[in-house]
Image (cartoon, rainbow, N blue to C red):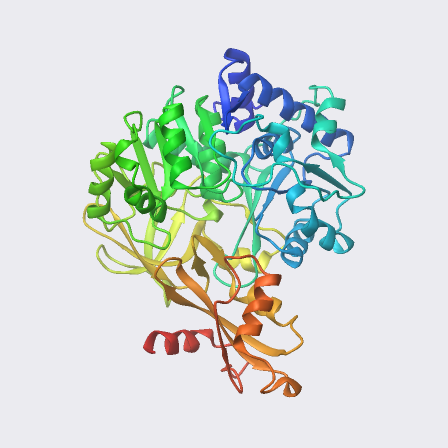
Length: 536
């Protein structure tokens, strides 16, 4: 037990389980998991991990879509002082292999619907144990609204154990673990930093508690709130809103596996949702839905969103207000490296076109990208730098990348912005080469390495191109092997990529080149290719 006013988030779960064990923690398509049940199940999973020798310094990979099992495993891992390593459920085998092995995860927990991906990757995975779980184990007989996937997969994974058996066979008495909030790592979130392959950002128990506390205080979250958790839980943004905040407050999370406007409206009305966090295209879909004006949104008191693929305008917010009686605003700005709550929009002083103001306890500065020692005055744009209690310890096994990103306690984000006289931040673009597709981070180096697995590809360079729906899409410039010249099409490369990369990641556009632009040292000059795209 931590002997300070700050505690790991799983201690809030334990507190609420003692004070109000029957309070619903999660509602999932009509099935309810109470605080007492969630605490019990996560204790049982923690005990299983301890029996397997998992403790401080170890990592457990979670490979699943939104489901109650994510909460059980997330908090179970942290109860033994280990680190959660969330994996994108859209990963294909090579992507999963890279992240799980880079994590050094000893245990992988996966949905049975993702078993084929795990099975194909398993010969190259260094994990000691695989735990599988099924949607069906926590769904009611008749899900409401309709469940969008098959509840149970017929694909069995050999040499794995079932999560139901794990929690049945292990009592809810894991060993007590003293957590060092500042030093012990609770979460390893994969991100690009400024450039390069995905890197694991080491986030402490204090990082997670600080960011959650700031979010809850800014928006006055209450124990009687009902949160709608629809964004992916594996992602820091979905996690801080859908996993951390409800548990911190002792509130209820209504969890959806996937967004549809019908499901969104149905659960808001049925469960009297009071707080929702979405992305702008979801807002637009609900507004245009024929039954939106007939839906009872009166319970909704707070709705924030992030502009993924579509900018949130004051006009769109007003159209939302006409339907729901409450406006929608841009939630803010943050990074995986800071656990995602650095700038938030004050709900009483919304300023459209900005992402809000720095949160309590956050220092921010705008510096000259060419000379970071020079701080830019108010109104002038430059690189955004952040310092607060959410700042990560560094990248897993990447000391050079850590030194580049983390200087003097400030995270040098690679993003370009400016502050106005009122302290609002305008986000103007990215200085880094990362591509943002439907809200997901796409790392050019990774896509290029994956493309090189195609026998026809000799060289590849990847940049982002504007996409009216997804924000950006991936474009690949490809040099083919001599024996494939004139014998392979762009569509064939795209089709192959679709089979070997996550859906948000594979190139939507391929252009063949005789050669690629490189510097004198051989570095790929993506910047010049991006400029070509802008000018075309």
